[in-house]
Image (cartoon, rainbow, N blue to C red; front, top):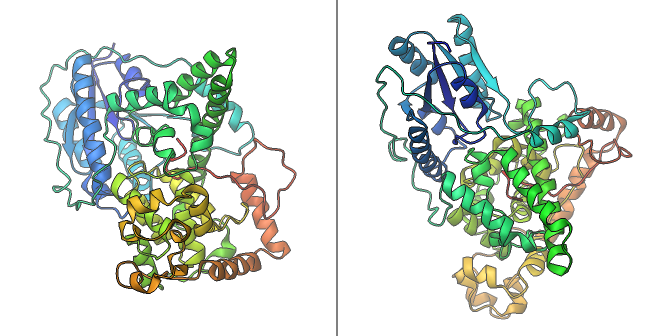
Length: 510
């Protein structure tokens, strides 16, 4: 083995299990595990108090897990290149190891700068793929089969880490206040860390997942019936490979069982397995086209919606005070918990984009901050998909009143999160403006709706479809589909509209 120190840089991979950079580094030489708290990253518009609180809990457990392997985590605060330069003075020449990251634009620029620095210093940087995202992918042909093969490869066990000869000091992990992150009221968010991740996954695969297929669309039932491992996948306390393999093992156990319960398990696990595929499918879009975070995927939609207008409507949407009870209940649940099921996330984005006619970027940033499980690759792909700006997905304008009646027929969910409506009868809970007592309620305890949802939806649909006419639009849509479209379904329609998937922001389907 070499005496050169192998620095393993942990980013969105806060675990020791199935961590190939860690195992690869340990096979070469002495390992220095490193986590860099980057104040500039946490000052970005998509970062939040709830996310850092979750990450800090993950880092605390990672420190203990690495110490148990023989070498504790070294924490440093600052710009990564500055940290690496300082470590070079402390340990001499080193090799750098990490997982590849499909993050936001800031991390993309940072990684390019780190690569340039490594090349200038003649330092080798080993970047190892994580999950099923493929860097420098030429096209999507064969992508799904490659994902399947990657997910069935054996899990990599944690390696032993002999202590370093040098004593490398570690900084204190800063608080959210140190990073100037204001408390955002996530009083019911999930706890971070590997142990919580394993317990959550096990609870889903042995008990809570039984009704997943039926219950995942409901914000009430989905809170317990969804796997709830999305934040752990986003920040890497679980590896996608181990989640996939655990799911397939449970599917095999149910394969030969008979009865209604076994049939329900098979259906639920089949649906869940499909959504694990989609997790990486959507991340691949941002990996292939980083500007997707900022620009409409189809150029015909650029500038269609005003930017900076309708501030009052946007503020009401952010506060959960649109006057549309089911929308407001979903937003307030998200504010308190950091999580919401996939259909309701899609509805929130659709209401902002269609009914309020807001450009998707600012609503997308607000939701990004609220999601503890914020995964940039999935988030921005879905923000565009649910706002209709991809050019290749069917336009899906959720009726927020109908969704309320369908998912919360007795108003239990609305009354829980919008207590101002407690006295409204069941028949009017989703349309309080129709109630005889509306004058005593609206504008006094609860706002009037900011928009007529039916009229706004009709107008938005006309605007969206007006853009889709013409050969020029279809030609660009075909190019977008060739680059980003799924290859899992028959390619019978490769024009302006191809698929209409209801899939996760972050990973809320999981």
